[in-house]
Image 1 (cartoon, helix red, strand yellow):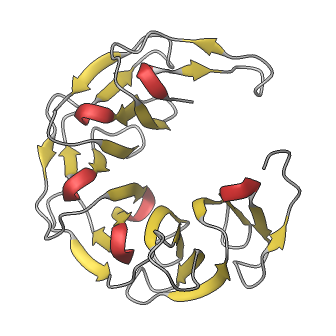
Image 2 (tube, one colour):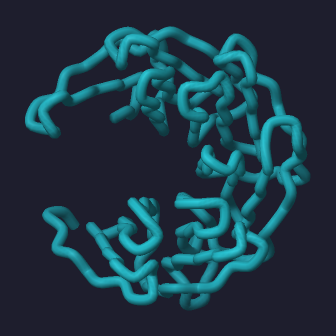
Length: 240
């Protein structure tokens, strides 16, 4: 887990106890990505990207920039490729295991909040403000806009194969009735359908297969599905 002032903590007993690690940065960290047998990466404020090659015991700085913040990072398995996204439409790409991070051009000037690599089929998805979903079909190809034009800000995405995925988000507070939304695609993001509309903002989504997944959000919201999102059931949360 990561947080303010460069916080990185880890557990090796299922969350029973947590220990702190020196992160080589004092900037806030917003996202962490763990890859088995590969690099661990975290990103955050001031364009910070840090990595670990010893399962999180020690961390080294890979990237920094005062021009943007980074809100999500994702690495492709044990390979050398990774993406990070953030404020002002920033998408960064590395093809050499973080030795250098290069910007990718997209026609978007607002926040990207999440990037996910559907690694088996090489597709990369970046989601953000105004309902935008950008897709890249692999290293060296351009990011293409797939969805946009809604006032809902998208915060998290998850794909379980090249066709089936979900994005979640919420109303930024500009009026209307949609405060939380789950969108689903079955054609790789070409079209999206609404699965759930709530009065509570949804912040994150994770699926373990095509049927079972969870979303979480404000006010301790936890919803669970076992049928690919056709129905979402409330699960008790210990926090509000």
